[in-house]
Length: 325
Image 1: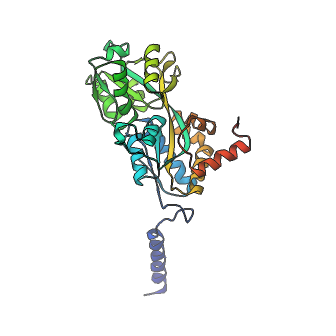
Image 2: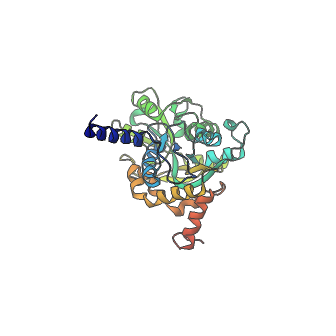
Image 3: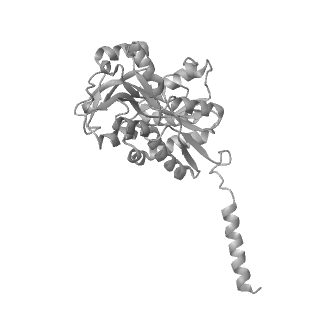
């Protein structure tokens, strides 16, 4: 074998060795990869999570993957089991899980999650085709309502909403993409959504069909908040959807990114720092991320912050970037 061929073989073997070597994380105490659990296709969590995974992969020099799920309830269960390191939750699902009060918890207290950073508000909103004749929540009695995955936010709360308001309706579960298509085809009458806006499935539906946003009355909002104190006032600004000509007043829940408590402190700090340092890119992934700013950490009033995240916010307060009063 001549020297030239030997040299080529040596280079090829070196290249193979480099490609075959596992990618090591940026820090020795960090995991080799990270998984973010989100929600179903057609929803805000899914789009937001894909954008976040791209940012973190680059900023942390660590492979980060987004994984679709049924939503907050399943995300909490996966983080508790160690099947995912990061996930998205609403304050409502997190409170139910922390105290083990919801039926889906079977009395178990899920206490392995720690808050990382605020995401955005989740307004509950109800959408029907304009020619459906549905103009109030009471009009939904006897109708077919799509509520997303069964373990998602709407899938958890809409049955409680209807029970509180004494509205009897048929519920259909599934991915938001599937349910929006069924509404468009006349197989469903209403979509009951709890997500950041604009909600991708509704935005796509609106581009094809004339829709109407059915708002709860002041009396219904009061009844819902009395029955479920974790609900907060929420308004979708006019123009978020082209056919929404005035603010849509409703109730909502805030969303937070959470991590397993065993995530290394320096990694948690780096994640929070990367999110806020790349805020504009995250907003490009989904407009709801406009609310992903440090000051909104105050919307979490019960869930412990991860020590790495706490250090980040303490530093921001000390430097005056966040008002401490």
